[in-house]
Image (cartoon, rainbow, N blue to C red; front, side, top):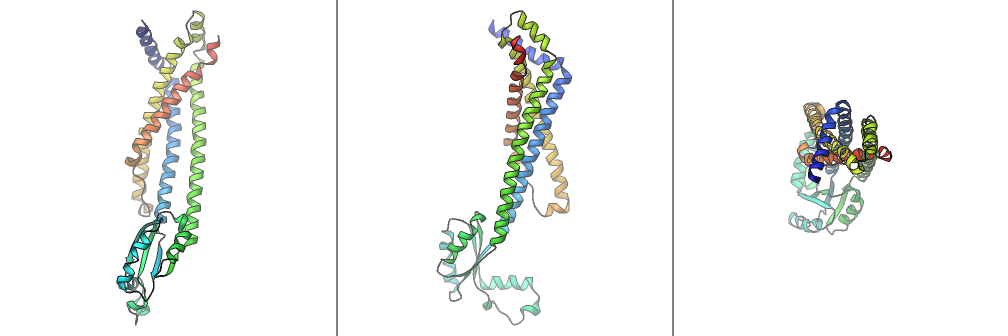
Length: 294
């Protein structure tokens, strides 16, 4: 008997979606729009973070080896450098390799009469976290055999500042959009329920329990939330693919790469569906709360 009653209430929830077609469409559209806005801000933040990290990786630290060290002795410093905590990679560059690079970048007149002995063996180093560049520079200078360390500390501070600002602004925008989206979607579902207040009042007068009345609205909210989340995800995917394709084809596309949607598709799908379900269920329950006091 209870199974039959539950089946009836669930069917009523699905039937209500078709019966109130315009408001159902409006609810799904609002959910989609809010999720697309939140998703777009998140994707923009991820891509900006990727660009900043790419720029950070180009900000190298160069450790010059003492002139008195032979090439073999200079190479032996590799283990001491790698042992430091903040070292992502350290590439040894010989005098001759450095000289060849110098010759490629400057005119022959400027390099006339020079040989590779005017340059030093060196290590080109990339850091795990450029925020600790100053500390790592000091640790490199303390290694016996390292004569000088060249590090762009001002650039590093600028990158760190930009990264922190982007992170804070992105989190603030996402939090604000989540709040606004919950408010808009909840009120949209309430508006859809407003026209059915007489139906709820009649059900209460004939003795229907709150749970009996509430279940169809919860089912309706869940279905609308799932539809909004799924369609919003597909729309976000298509929009992102279109924008990234145009960006890659433009001049700006050669300056940086975007985050492939395939890398973030699963977590975004879970997030979209989760938000849609929560909004739908919450909206369905909250929308009729005032009308259950009849």
